[in-house]
Image (cartoon, rainbow, N blue to C red; front, side):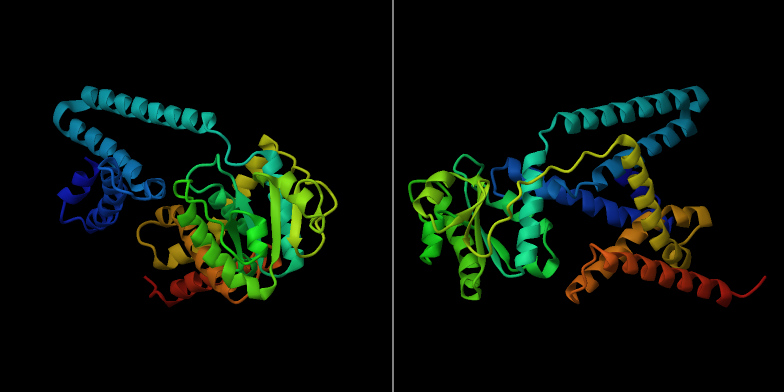
Length: 344
């Protein structure tokens, strides 16, 4: 309904542009879902994560329904349609909240603390790294994908590019061989893939570590290799000594601090995008400023990618300077437009 409402008025350029953007965007995850139901292998969770256009079109459909009812059935019917729309939105929000609230956390406090500590250790080592993983009870990735995502998120960009995982036995990695288990469905294919990535790093004398929480047989492997240094929760097959202190879970933020962080984050990205939307946006000033957070995210992401490629870490002072520069350039662009516009 929302897509049809946008496309119905071909004379309204803004609605036509919105239709060209939102309708194809919504079709991508919809087609992926249909292909998945047909039994084909598609990355459905990743496709659905980009399905934001579907609720946007749904909201536009509710607006279109209210407008249509108002034009044909009068005020009372309009009120009824508006109430139905509000109830629908409340139901949607409640359903989303319950789904989110009952979902298992992506990472518990202990695991988060381990990866924080491991990330600092590998950053201090400042060399390529391989994390050996072997979780037969995990899903089809045998634990490799969560470990890869978590550890790379803790590392500087340049170091993350030379950090990978190896699926299998750490002894075989030390011998320069892949781990193969033909009796385990799907294991060899993924093991060969991780072996290719690990093999490219072996000539660079990488740090090789194993984690008790992500390697079945951790204790047996450590007992069989007394030369491996361990601190009980991780062991170093090759590299600097492991950190002596146990990982400490970070304190959970209070509701007040979360509110402050949310408000300040919104203010930062809005400030970064304000000048750009004033310069390039259309419509009233209030409408353009409403787009400032989205424009700020775009500007900061592009600037951040460029700086990371240049080797500048945006997680510290470099990030602060980046925000200031992006905001200042946007302000200059906005002021330049204002001064160049003819008076009257």
